[in-house]
Length: 169
Picture 1 (spheres, helix red, strand yellow):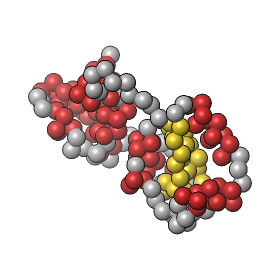
Picture 2 (cartoon, one colour; picture 1 turned 90 degrees about the vertical axis):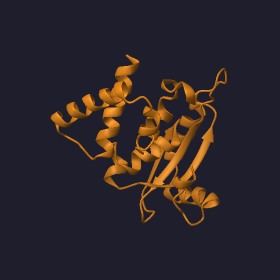
Picture 3 (cartoon, one colour; picture 1 turned 120 degrees about the horizontal axis):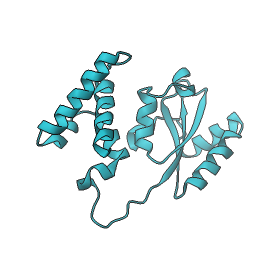
């Protein structure tokens, strides 16, 4: 089952990297290509790390890469509440995630259709970190109930020019 998940993720990675969408034949070819790569390339890690989307897979499924998980150390999962805006800083989206770099990448590449894709909200302007999911979700709900001006004031406390913070994560 684990290999099937990895193969499926590689298929999605190839599709994203080469902008291949909406063609069943292409997905099947990519799936077979992913399987061949896993089976035939002995040093697959170096090859895969050349594809930007693979960073997402490695971060999202670290247990599938034993060399990335050190011995008996427990990986502490952090949770993040983040605010995205558009280039004019007029519309905000508030979200929560346990993998900020992956989630921002998904927003920027428009992998998920919805509000952020519709309004082109790709600029990360605010981030808060929490140790539990409950705390993060509570904060997300709180911020979603705030008025627009309150959100702007919160953002400007740490990011007065509303610069894109995604390169700092």
